[in-house]
Amino acid sequence: MTSRALLRCTGLCVLAVSLSVVMASDKNFKVDIYPPNPKQGQTVLLNVTGAEESFRYAEWYKGNTTSAANQIVGYNNDGSINKGDRYFPEAEIQSNGSLVIKNFTKEFEGNYTSSIQGFTRLWQVTVFLKGDDGKVDDPKPVLSGGAIAGICIAVISVAVAAIAGIIYSVKHKDSGK
Ligand SMILES: *[C@@H]1O[C@H](CO)[C@@H](O)[C@H](O)[C@H]1NC(C)=O
Ligand SMILES: *[C@@H]1O[C@H](CO)[C@@H](O)[C@H](O)[C@H]1NC(C)=O
Ligand SMILES: *[C@@H]1O[C@H](CO)[C@@H](O)[C@H](O)[C@H]1NC(C)=O
Ligand SMILES: *[C@@H]1O[C@H](CO)[C@@H](O)[C@H](O)[C@H]1NC(C)=O
Ligand SMILES: *[C@@H]1O[C@H](CO)[C@@H](O)[C@H](O)[C@H]1NC(C)=O
Image (cartoon, rainbow, N blue to C red; front, top):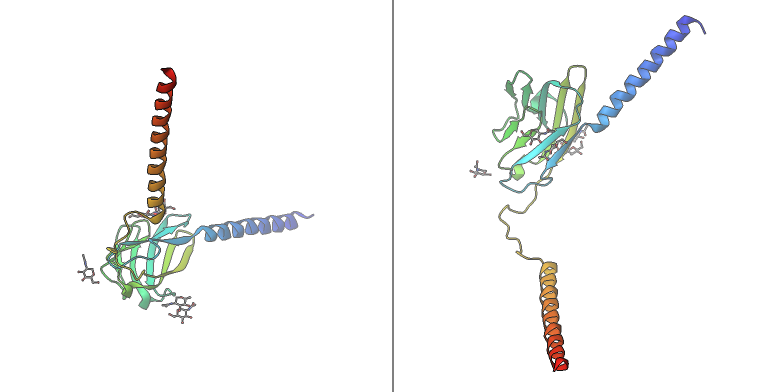
Protein backbone atom coordinates (compact mmCIF):
# COMPACT_ATOMS: atom_id res chain seq x y z
CA MET A 1 0.00 0.00 0.00
CA THR A 2 1.36 3.43 -0.91
CA SER A 3 1.47 6.00 1.82
CA ARG A 4 -1.11 8.08 -0.06
CA ALA A 5 -3.55 5.16 -0.14
CA LEU A 6 -2.92 4.58 3.54
CA LEU A 7 -3.63 8.23 4.26
CA ARG A 8 -6.85 8.03 2.23
CA CYS A 9 -7.89 4.90 4.13
CA THR A 10 -7.16 6.50 7.49
CA GLY A 11 -9.18 9.52 6.42
CA LEU A 12 -12.16 7.32 5.56
CA CYS A 13 -11.86 5.57 8.89
CA VAL A 14 -11.87 8.87 10.77
CA LEU A 15 -14.88 9.98 8.74
CA ALA A 16 -16.74 6.74 9.49
CA VAL A 17 -15.97 7.01 13.20
CA SER A 18 -17.05 10.65 13.40
CA LEU A 19 -20.26 9.86 11.48
CA SER A 20 -21.12 7.09 13.91
CA VAL A 21 -20.44 9.44 16.84
CA VAL A 22 -22.78 12.02 15.30
CA MET A 23 -25.47 9.40 14.80
CA ALA A 24 -25.10 8.04 18.33
CA SER A 25 -25.60 11.49 19.85
CA ASP A 26 -28.67 12.10 17.68
CA LYS A 27 -30.28 8.99 19.11
CA ASN A 28 -29.85 10.36 22.63
CA PHE A 29 -31.26 13.79 21.83
CA LYS A 30 -34.88 13.95 22.91
CA VAL A 31 -37.53 15.95 24.68
CA ASP A 32 -39.49 14.32 27.50
CA ILE A 33 -42.75 15.92 28.59
CA TYR A 34 -43.60 16.06 32.32
CA PRO A 35 -46.39 15.44 33.01
CA PRO A 36 -46.93 13.72 29.62
CA ASN A 37 -50.54 14.94 29.34
CA PRO A 38 -50.89 18.07 31.49
CA LYS A 39 -54.24 19.15 32.84
CA GLN A 40 -55.63 22.69 32.72
CA GLY A 41 -53.66 24.95 35.06
CA GLN A 42 -50.67 22.63 35.48
CA THR A 43 -47.04 23.50 34.79
CA VAL A 44 -45.47 21.33 32.12
CA LEU A 45 -41.76 20.79 31.46
CA LEU A 46 -40.43 19.99 27.97
CA ASN A 47 -37.18 18.49 29.21
CA VAL A 48 -34.38 18.58 26.64
CA THR A 49 -31.74 15.89 27.07
CA GLY A 50 -28.88 14.41 25.09
CA ALA A 51 -27.32 17.41 23.31
CA GLU A 52 -23.81 16.23 24.12
CA GLU A 53 -22.23 19.65 23.75
CA SER A 54 -22.74 22.97 25.48
CA PHE A 55 -24.80 25.27 23.30
CA ARG A 56 -24.51 28.71 21.78
CA TYR A 57 -28.26 29.11 21.75
CA ALA A 58 -31.41 27.09 22.34
CA GLU A 59 -34.69 27.84 20.61
CA TRP A 60 -38.29 26.68 20.78
CA TYR A 61 -40.77 26.81 17.92
CA LYS A 62 -44.53 26.21 17.90
CA GLY A 63 -45.05 23.80 15.02
CA ASN A 64 -42.93 21.20 13.33
CA THR A 65 -40.52 23.50 11.54
CA THR A 66 -37.97 26.09 12.63
CA SER A 67 -39.36 28.84 10.40
CA ALA A 68 -38.95 32.29 11.95
CA ALA A 69 -42.73 32.73 12.03
CA ASN A 70 -42.93 29.75 14.42
CA GLN A 71 -40.39 30.94 16.97
CA ILE A 72 -41.60 31.15 20.56
CA VAL A 73 -38.44 32.01 22.43
CA GLY A 74 -34.67 31.61 22.36
CA TYR A 75 -31.97 31.49 25.02
CA ASN A 76 -28.41 32.58 24.27
CA ASN A 77 -25.53 31.31 26.36
CA ASP A 78 -24.81 34.90 27.48
CA GLY A 79 -28.12 34.65 29.38
CA SER A 80 -30.15 36.86 27.03
CA ILE A 81 -33.58 35.81 25.80
CA ASN A 82 -35.28 36.58 22.46
CA LYS A 83 -39.03 36.52 22.13
CA GLY A 84 -40.30 35.31 18.76
CA ASP A 85 -43.53 35.74 16.80
CA ARG A 86 -45.24 32.90 18.68
CA TYR A 87 -44.06 34.02 22.14
CA PHE A 88 -46.54 33.70 25.00
CA PRO A 89 -45.78 34.71 28.59
CA GLU A 90 -46.48 31.25 30.06
CA ALA A 91 -43.52 29.88 28.05
CA GLU A 92 -40.29 30.21 30.03
CA ILE A 93 -37.10 28.93 28.47
CA GLN A 94 -34.57 27.51 30.93
CA SER A 95 -30.82 27.99 30.89
CA ASN A 96 -30.47 24.28 30.02
CA GLY A 97 -32.63 24.72 26.90
CA SER A 98 -35.76 23.07 28.36
CA LEU A 99 -39.11 24.85 28.14
CA VAL A 100 -41.47 25.33 31.08
CA ILE A 101 -45.08 26.18 30.23
CA LYS A 102 -47.07 27.51 33.17
CA ASN A 103 -50.84 27.43 33.62
CA PHE A 104 -51.38 24.95 30.78
CA THR A 105 -54.54 25.24 28.68
CA LYS A 106 -55.70 23.24 25.65
CA GLU A 107 -54.73 26.24 23.47
CA PHE A 108 -51.09 25.34 24.13
CA GLU A 109 -51.51 21.90 22.59
CA GLY A 110 -49.61 21.13 19.42
CA ASN A 111 -46.17 20.46 18.04
CA TYR A 112 -43.14 22.02 19.67
CA THR A 113 -39.74 21.95 17.99
CA SER A 114 -36.59 22.25 20.06
CA SER A 115 -33.47 23.47 18.32
CA ILE A 116 -30.12 23.44 20.08
CA GLN A 117 -27.21 25.10 18.32
CA GLY A 118 -24.04 23.61 19.75
CA PHE A 119 -20.53 24.84 18.99
CA THR A 120 -20.00 22.27 16.22
CA ARG A 121 -23.48 21.12 15.28
CA LEU A 122 -27.24 21.45 15.51
CA TRP A 123 -29.81 19.25 17.25
CA GLN A 124 -33.53 19.40 16.47
CA VAL A 125 -36.55 17.38 17.49
CA THR A 126 -40.31 17.91 17.38
CA VAL A 127 -42.66 16.66 20.10
CA PHE A 128 -46.44 16.76 20.26
CA LEU A 129 -47.85 18.25 23.45
CA LYS A 130 -51.31 16.86 24.19
CA GLY A 131 -53.32 17.94 27.19
CA ASP A 132 -55.55 15.86 29.43
CA ASP A 133 -59.24 16.71 29.41
CA GLY A 134 -59.51 16.31 33.18
CA LYS A 135 -59.09 19.12 35.66
CA VAL A 136 -56.39 19.32 38.33
CA ASP A 137 -58.94 19.23 41.14
CA ASP A 138 -60.81 16.14 39.88
CA PRO A 139 -61.68 14.26 43.06
CA LYS A 140 -59.82 10.99 43.43
CA PRO A 141 -61.09 8.12 45.58
CA VAL A 142 -59.22 8.22 48.90
CA LEU A 143 -58.83 4.44 48.96
CA SER A 144 -58.97 2.14 45.96
CA GLY A 145 -61.12 -1.00 46.00
CA GLY A 146 -57.95 -3.08 46.32
CA ALA A 147 -56.76 -1.12 49.37
CA ILE A 148 -60.16 -1.49 51.07
CA ALA A 149 -60.16 -5.27 50.40
CA GLY A 150 -56.61 -5.45 51.82
CA ILE A 151 -57.64 -3.62 54.99
CA CYS A 152 -60.66 -5.95 55.42
CA ILE A 153 -58.44 -9.02 55.05
CA ALA A 154 -55.97 -7.59 57.58
CA VAL A 155 -58.74 -6.83 60.12
CA ILE A 156 -60.23 -10.31 59.69
CA SER A 157 -56.79 -11.95 60.07
CA VAL A 158 -56.13 -10.04 63.30
CA ALA A 159 -59.57 -11.01 64.65
CA VAL A 160 -59.04 -14.68 63.74
CA ALA A 161 -55.62 -14.66 65.38
CA ALA A 162 -57.04 -13.03 68.53
CA ILE A 163 -59.86 -15.56 68.77
CA ALA A 164 -57.43 -18.44 68.21
CA GLY A 165 -55.23 -16.99 70.96
CA ILE A 166 -58.14 -16.76 73.41
CA ILE A 167 -59.26 -20.32 72.66
CA TYR A 168 -55.69 -21.56 73.08
CA SER A 169 -55.14 -19.83 76.41
CA VAL A 170 -58.56 -20.94 77.74
CA LYS A 171 -57.82 -24.55 76.76
CA HIS A 172 -54.33 -24.27 78.26
CA LYS A 173 -55.75 -22.99 81.56
CA ASP A 174 -58.28 -25.88 81.61
CA SER A 175 -55.65 -28.53 81.06
CA GLY A 176 -53.42 -26.88 83.69
CA LYS A 177 -56.07 -27.42 86.38
C1 LIG B 1 -34.90 16.14 33.03
O1 LIG B 1 -33.89 15.31 32.48
C2 LIG B 1 -32.78 15.15 33.36
C3 LIG B 1 -31.71 14.38 32.60
O2 LIG B 1 -32.23 13.20 32.01
C4 LIG B 1 -33.23 14.44 34.61
O3 LIG B 1 -32.15 14.29 35.50
C5 LIG B 1 -34.31 15.28 35.27
O4 LIG B 1 -34.81 14.59 36.39
C6 LIG B 1 -35.45 15.54 34.31
N1 LIG B 1 -36.39 16.48 34.93
C7 LIG B 1 -37.59 16.11 35.39
C8 LIG B 1 -38.38 17.15 36.04
O5 LIG B 1 -38.00 14.97 35.25
C1 LIG C 1 -33.56 21.89 33.13
O1 LIG C 1 -33.94 22.81 34.12
C2 LIG C 1 -35.19 22.55 34.75
C3 LIG C 1 -35.46 23.62 35.78
O2 LIG C 1 -35.11 24.85 35.36
C4 LIG C 1 -35.14 21.19 35.43
O3 LIG C 1 -36.40 20.90 35.99
C5 LIG C 1 -34.79 20.12 34.41
O4 LIG C 1 -34.66 18.89 35.06
C6 LIG C 1 -33.49 20.48 33.70
N1 LIG C 1 -33.26 19.51 32.64
C7 LIG C 1 -32.10 18.87 32.48
C8 LIG C 1 -32.00 17.94 31.32
O5 LIG C 1 -31.15 19.03 33.23
C1 LIG D 1 -46.20 19.84 9.99
O1 LIG D 1 -47.51 19.95 10.52
C2 LIG D 1 -48.51 20.25 9.55
C3 LIG D 1 -49.80 20.42 10.29
O2 LIG D 1 -49.67 21.33 11.31
C4 LIG D 1 -48.56 19.13 8.55
O3 LIG D 1 -49.51 19.47 7.55
C5 LIG D 1 -47.21 18.94 7.91
O4 LIG D 1 -47.25 17.81 7.07
C6 LIG D 1 -46.15 18.72 8.96
N1 LIG D 1 -44.85 18.66 8.34
C7 LIG D 1 -43.99 17.68 8.59
C8 LIG D 1 -42.68 17.80 7.90
O5 LIG D 1 -44.23 16.77 9.36
C1 LIG E 1 -54.45 30.61 34.11
O1 LIG E 1 -55.15 30.65 32.88
C2 LIG E 1 -56.54 30.95 33.00
C3 LIG E 1 -57.16 30.90 31.62
O2 LIG E 1 -56.79 29.71 30.97
C4 LIG E 1 -56.71 32.34 33.61
O3 LIG E 1 -58.09 32.59 33.79
C5 LIG E 1 -55.98 32.38 34.95
O4 LIG E 1 -56.04 33.70 35.46
C6 LIG E 1 -54.54 31.98 34.79
N1 LIG E 1 -53.88 31.89 36.09
C7 LIG E 1 -52.69 32.42 36.33
C8 LIG E 1 -52.15 32.23 37.71
O5 LIG E 1 -52.06 33.02 35.48
C1 LIG F 1 -47.75 17.70 14.38
O1 LIG F 1 -46.75 17.11 13.57
C2 LIG F 1 -47.18 15.92 12.94
C3 LIG F 1 -45.99 15.27 12.27
O2 LIG F 1 -45.08 16.18 11.82
C4 LIG F 1 -48.29 16.27 11.98
O3 LIG F 1 -48.74 15.09 11.36
C5 LIG F 1 -49.42 16.91 12.74
O4 LIG F 1 -50.43 17.36 11.83
C6 LIG F 1 -48.96 18.11 13.55
N1 LIG F 1 -50.03 18.55 14.40
C7 LIG F 1 -50.35 19.82 14.56
C8 LIG F 1 -51.48 20.11 15.48
O5 LIG F 1 -49.73 20.71 14.00
